[in-house]
Length: 444
Image (tube, rainbow, N blue to C red; front, top):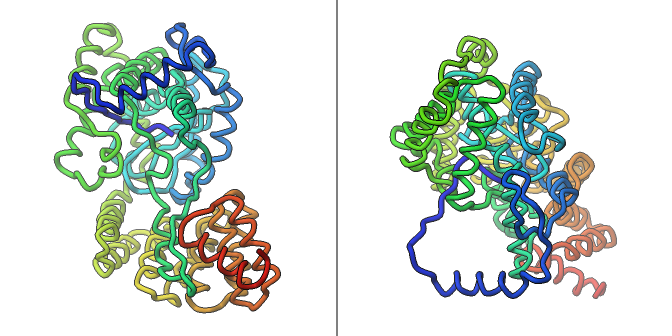
């Protein structure tokens, strides 16, 4: 998954790691697959087919969208963003890809793309933009990563170097005999599960393609300049709001200046194309009214990261006063309460979240964790089973089902789930717990 900004410093010298990388690439260059880059037309190392890109997308994108509290239930807003995205996609180099453009409920500031064309934009970043052309610049940048196959190229290199590339366990947690730190089982849900660092050249190319696509779709090139300016300003005035984005994809002044120069020199006649500010404001009016809530939630997330749970709880509570049934806010509060081992209250907030968005999976999982804390193992099993039906492929959910069965004294079913878990994950405290139970019960 690529994100709007990336950076990797070039120091002018080859480190030992760089040398090994280049040597490995050279050693397989005669046998590795090559393909013509759809943007440049030049041959490049490529071990992933287009079908594999789409499959990686199908497997991972739904989990990340759920981690970001699901696709917005505001159908009008989603349709608006989808319309802008499809207009740009039609003018891209890979117009045939199965693109999806979704607004996700997360309130941090970011946008990202998976290699098969699934693109997400958070509510947090939409609240910061001023016009539709800036939105087009944002989407155009993500389309640039998809069209230039940056993720596929990176994964191809990883395959050559023997790096494991594949699905991720969405919830990084600890499990001891009593499941230990339950807060850990929800702490991994967040912004950077599948984010990868991309080179400066990748980011420059995505910027360039983004402006090309937005101009071709009829937007002013000043939209990209405005986007860069918004993010540059936020990095100075609200660094915590965009911490997740810039930790792996830092903004640089150079890229803003490049956008200014490119707009003036390559597209001088396109600067006066529409910005569509009024249409953007009309289409995002309900979302922008929640900007004070987003700010409070961002402050709560920062406090959570610092393990200042009481402060985080206060921020989330203040935020929920703006929209008491906000799905993301309710789950943020539930996870904060789990971290404080307040199982009953956590279950209440998770239940409210599930009522607010019945089909989104994360609330099921968080309610299951709270139910385990409350030793209501049958309720927990029902929650994790519902989660797995809605969003299969998360091995931690399989472990939690096993732990629920164990709590119900159903060793046979617990053993089946633990065996399933160990086929997917073979290290960490959860794996140790599963293995020890299977050994103790005589299944190994």
